[in-house]
Amino acid sequence: MSEKTLIILKPDCMKKNLAGTVLARFESAGLRIVACKMIRMTDALLREHYSHLVDKPFFGGLCDFMKECPVIVGVLQGENAIARVRELLGPTNSALAPAGTIRGDFGDKANITCNICHASDGAEAAAAEVARFFCENEIF
Ligand code: CMP
Image (cartoon, rainbow, N blue to C red; front, side, top):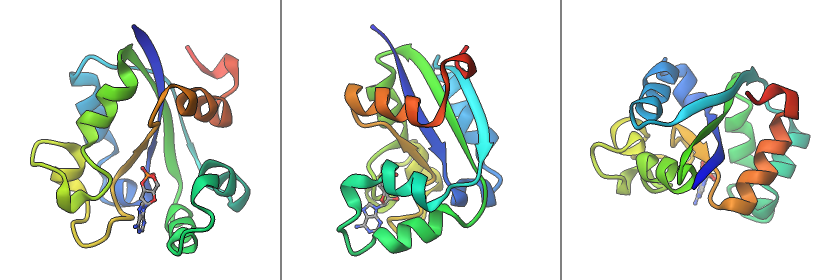
């Protein structure tokens, strides 16, 4: 089934000049970029996007990290895109991500927050996250 999923190339990805490399991993796997833009995260956006994490002790640090520099948000489309993008990324903790996954190859193994790229974790989240960052007329 063709699906859409949201990705965010995080500040560590941008600072390491890995945006093209990470997008190429997704494109090489057959996923299509159907929306893409660079934005600066705000506290309001982060409180909404990470609303399930606001009570976690790392929430403040996560927000500070996500505002360190502009990020790239995008929508990828393809067969089973939601699960496939998460497989290509590897687990949240880069220290546990196998070589060959994006986080295993590029994530910070000493800092779970710096894991290169966010991706929607299910169909409901994907629909909400795509709508959070993109208007209908920005998706092609
Ligand atoms: P992401 O996939 O964007 O979802 C939530 C983010 O919070 C996660 O990637 C990490 O960047 C960060 N995160 C998750 N767990 C922790 C943790 N235990 N400590 C610090 N940051 C975390």
